[in-house]
Length: 347
Ligand code: SP5
Ligand code: ZN
Image (tube, rainbow, N blue to C red):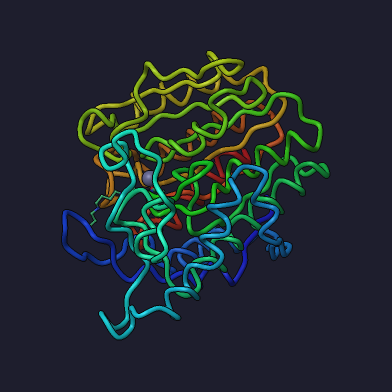
């Protein structure tokens, strides 16, 4: 399995997130790239991602979001923010939700700190110098991996970072800016694969991917994740009743799992999703390894052996597969978990 990576993915430094009103250390750190690379690199072909321009992101994102992400860090540096608060990150503090709008048509804000909440939907996903370059490189990893698979490789792994499955057509959040897996899926569609499946094994529901394909029948989205109803991100999506709409009715499937779920029930859900997508022509796996027992960001209790088995199940479908890195935050075990999945998928 070729490993597609880019040195630019290290350029995003979240520094901190604002969690329940307090700055806490960022979890989605650049060291994740090297933790994974050191583990999966040996014995596999390393491929540096092709360069892509902002326009490549329009396949799944609105231009307004792409333009905001591309320019926000430079505009922040030009603004009064350095003198006001010193070194800081772009973070929304006003959100134009229905509660603010009250049915009235708003005028677009002029200040960047007023604009940020139009695109950013939480306080944990900060934009700083290098965020755009890293997010574009992460997308490039996924798009390059999809190209390798479209050109005939059975499987390719994209070491995308920052992750992507929480990025919606118009918004960023959940440590995600650009939806790498959705770009890979769309790229496989464009290459002629008629029915593409996205199976999302990250501990969290991929609300962004679900949103992108919500009304489409040609890209199926299936996810297993910790039950958002138990108080987990993204809180308002990921429930079993969400199954798609319009042409996409029935093409979304969510399997929320209780806190504390371990290998047995987690693998049953992986198996159910595998059967559900077996008749597709290509597969994208949103490969988050934060469902692992020692991960600080989720209460699921999956082991490395569980991830290996998940790889066996999804790889066993025999579909051309693009594996896209999502979450996974416990640096000491991160590389081993990704390797376990890859070895299972390759077997
Ligand atoms: C891609 C992905 O896995 N995104 C995860 C988004 C969920 N983050 C929720 C964070 C909740 C608070 N974390 C407290 C961290 C303390 N440092
Ligand atoms: Zn996650």
